[in-house]
Length: 89
Image 1 (cartoon, helix red, strand yellow):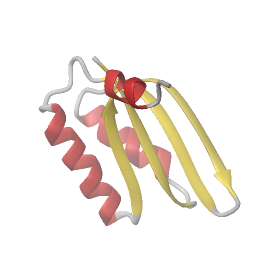
Image 2 (cartoon, rainbow, N blue to C red):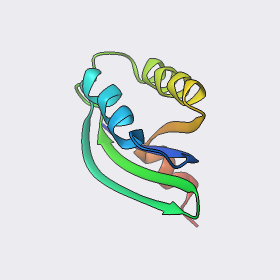
Image 3 (cartoon, rainbow, N blue to C red):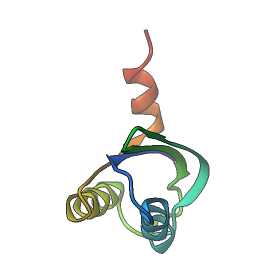
Image 4 (cartoon, rainbow, N blue to C red):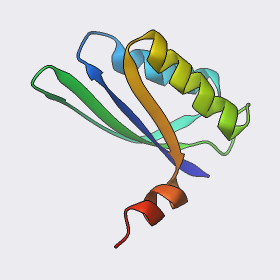
């Protein structure tokens, strides 16, 4: 199963590394990544494969959210099919 990870926050060194480290530790593969800095704000969207993730999807979402809280970032993960349904007109 694929999912979309979004990260938003004040730009600083190490955001991509930290998010990717968490995903790798849980067995999540990054398939595609797009990131940019808008003025002082870092934004990133990642397409990931969670099919071999070693924890349930809901727990992964909690881990990412908790890390975001700790690092003053907004980190969310959403199943690709739900993401597509929400953005379909």
